[in-house]
Image 1 (cartoon, rainbow, N blue to C red):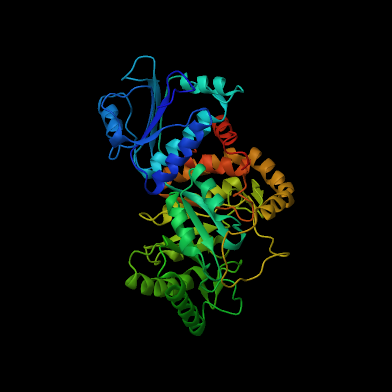
Image 2: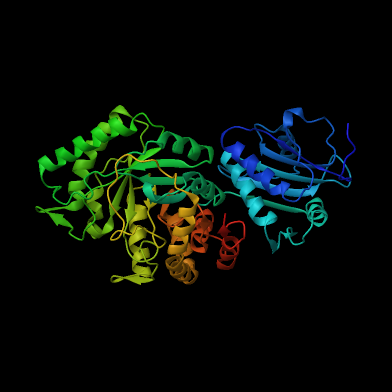
Length: 493
């Protein structure tokens, strides 16, 4: 009805699904592409596409929900995503109209669609990059016409990836996640899919947090203590073990049983350096109590995925005493040596070297065949225990004023600078660590302690390095650093 203001070939984005995780993926892709176009990008369900596609075409979705992608894969024009969470990205001439371009983001599943979009945005939309497979220069010029021309003339490329570590993410006390929506958005952009969040009492808005996390492809494991922090309790005393069991069952039934959580995480009386009490190892006492409590929980809720956060300082070589632990309980190891376990990233710490840490972790990774090897690496930001920590009752999680976020980031940036500097020196050791653990036990679960670090406002270089390392530690050190430092990740949002 009206003459077009912007002449020439236009882009149309055809999607397979606008539900769940793919809803966010489509929003992220639209934001990225729209930043190049002065006209409003048409976004249309593929079921409504004409038989003959004209103009520049972007296809996003899975084989199951986008038949145009399925046909391109069947014809060999696009590689099939290789596995769960995987994706294929292709830029090539359109097979439907000469002189037009085709962009395909094909996911093996909904998460793969999201990660393909995020990689496209990071690699293509927001930086100039040249590698063997890419020669993409977008956002290199000012002005609408120049930017539109860049997208219209996007060069050919093909990329297919799947994550090396299937469960990757963060651990944090909930009260220092100041904006849970931004925090989870950042996790999704970093291709993280697991968040362990610890509380004294479940937040009032936990249902909303869970819904939002799941819409970003992030599973949430709820953490609370099984005796941790109660120094007057003693694992060797039957009355204390009974008290802990009563506390756990009451807490679960009252606060968590009705929630759509993806798992439980707990710590108990292991954060010390004593390896024995009352003539038995701490490991042995833990097995007795945990098997009792977890057995009761799993009898009534077999779907529960329980993680036992275990401080290796009280276990060390007595880890073999954990052999009787219920195989349904995952041990998440903490404080097992130097990098990547130490709060301050160091190759040597408290008598441990990287080599001794690696040797000990090899033993732990092989110890319980058929179960995940889970760890909580550290070396980023953590609570200000002396100045600010206190126990909290019911609260609203992640609903702080934005001004507070900026003030907090400014206060923390000096400490971040120190941690970033250390990781720039040590990240190759972390990559080596994960490569060697994968070779022993390919079923890894890694949740890094990133708390009170304002991830919701800015992704620090060391956090981006961590995320890229978990996605694929087999990359070269140079490529890891280059991918982590992309402008899409680094900077205040």
